[in-house]
Amino acid sequence: MSGSQIRRSMPLFPISIVMQLTELSARQIRYYEEHELIAPARTDGNRRLFSLTDIDKLLEIKDLIDQGVNLAGIKQIFSVKEKQVITEDVKKEAEKARRELTDEDLRKLLRKELLNAGRFNNNGRNSMGQGGSQFFQR
Amino acid sequence: MSGSQIRRSMPLFPISIVMQLTELSARQIRYYEEHELIAPARTDGNRRLFSLTDIDKLLEIKDLIDQGVNLAGIKQIFSVKEKQVITEDVKKEAEKARRELTDEDLRKLLRKELLNAGRFNNNGRNSMGQGGSQFFQR
DNA sequence: AACAAATGTTACAATTTCTAACCTCTGGAT
DNA sequence: ATCCAGAGGTTAGAAATTGTAACATTTGTT
Image 1: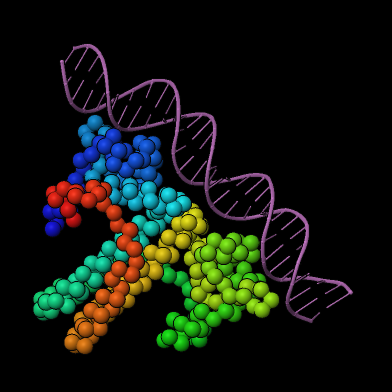
Image 2: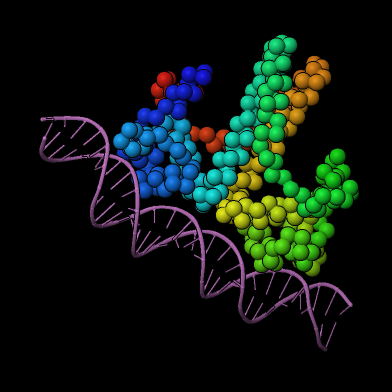
């Protein structure tokens, strides 16, 4: 399971292959790297080497571009999706807990939760600054 | 709790007030409505009336615009965040289950999970189409 | 070692897209 | 009836994205 993660992030493909797989131009792919949407590995000779994860990301980028989203937007979307991955992690564990419900699993779940607490800056502001009316409090 | 939800979505503010609160121009605010990022209510005389939810959204829009995200991107982000709310819902329930762990709660959790399953189109594609190599399977 | 093909970098240009500002006109409120 | 906030159309300027070309470097092959 962690092995497949390694495989998915293994740098394997030269840009020519990625162009075919994604139907993106080399220029586009380099541009997206320049703006830090992807970070392909490099060979000793400075050639890009893309992983499956990179390719998936490129396909997602292509989708969003088609929907009119600009690069800044895609960057934001990726960052909220990263959060999503973690909550989904918790979700999966909850699922497992539902099935098994051993004390050991519950301890693991709790531990993970605590580790992730406050890991991201919560961007949620509120229109009334501090000391907003109690009437409107969430 | 559901009461405060009602209050937060209650149409209260005319555009002039919203301009001050958000430091957005009227033209901008209308522009964002035109592109369906907000949907303020209207008075009998067709004037816009904004809720606190609208104002929060506008502040978030302002932030994202400042970060260079275009409207299409903001729209996507809003839709992703909606998902997030739901997974966070599940997360909260998982937290609760961890504390209480009654059979009843677990049944509720499961029910919610099943109800939300497939509620959103999962946009996740895979670089290898169908029949991709087992080697790379997630 | 030498050559051909692929890829990297950089610069310039062109095109497209966004967004804010300008402007006019309408309709509601006093 | 008048006044003014608000609605909506149009446009200009800026920014983003991609294409193209020139030239350097790497890779693989013979």
